[in-house]
Amino acid sequence: GCSGEAQADEPTQPSEAAASTADVDDAAAPIWDQGPKIRLASQPTYDPNDSLAPLVSSVQPAVVSIQARRASHGPFGMGGGGGGIGSGFIISADGLVVTNHHVVDGNDEFEAHLQDGRRFKATVVGSDPQTDLAVLRLIEAKQLPTVAFGSSETLAVGDWVIAMGSPMGLDQTVTRGIVSAKGRGGLGLYKDG
Image 1 (cartoon, rainbow, N blue to C red):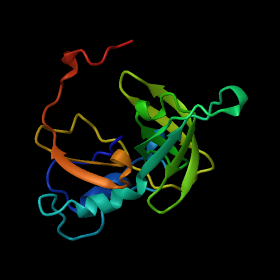
Image 2 (cartoon, rainbow, N blue to C red):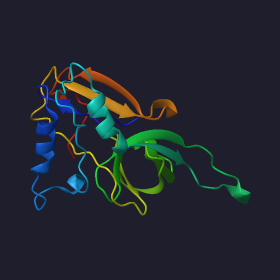
Image 3 (cartoon, rainbow, N blue to C red):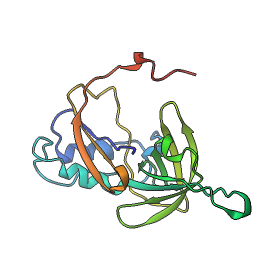
């Protein structure tokens, strides 16, 4: 599934993380930075080496599980069957969700499940098979929790990252690791144009 990643250049205090999201100039903010900002849980001595729980609990509300299915029908109303599951993360309060291309590919009906129990039908905004990314729009969504993209410019080899999602339908699964390398575009996996 799609992962929501968080990064910590150095152990971050909650007040520093909150300040970094609160200082965003709303007029210059990109579309995915709209709405309520996710903030780290307020613990006076947050250190990712001790626990990632404060970070996880503050990001989890913006992670969704996605049910996908093919609604196409064959002759005499016989269903086309198929579908699958995936995950994604909410990037705008009005319901833009980043997920994977393989989640939406070949499917035409989608439902996103939030941690708080809400469910939304969704439509595909766009999809790119080469990068395996897709964007969904949740229908009639508003005031949703969001996460913002980080910057690979400030990310360093050895930084902590977390992945959150619904692998094999196991909702709200979390794992951690480190950035193992950067600048691997020369492997021929991605092409411009």
